[in-house]
Image (cartoon, rainbow, N blue to C red; front, top):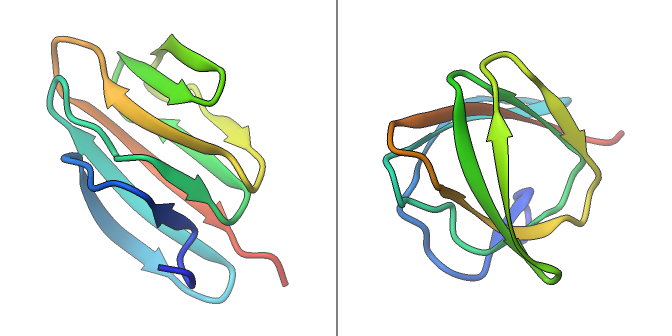
Length: 104
C-alpha cells in the first residue's frame, strides 16, 4: 500500500472504516474489540487521533510496549514515520477517529 498512509507489515483484526479521502485529509474510524490490533504499520503522513470512548491502548514499537490510557475527546497528534502496532488493552470496545494530513 505505498500510496496509503498506513503501510501495513502484518494484518490486524481491528476494523477500519474510511470516512473521507480527499486532496487534504484521509479520515478513518477504527473500532477494536478487546485484544484486537491494527497490525504493525508505518504512518506515511502526520496524523491526529480523536478517541470516541475512554479506554486503554497497548502501543508496541521499536522501544517496546507501553499502555496508554485515552479519554473520549482527548486528541493527540503524531508525525509522519511513526511505526507501531496498536492493540485494545481494555475490557470494552475502543473506537477512535484518525485524521491523516496530506501534505501539499
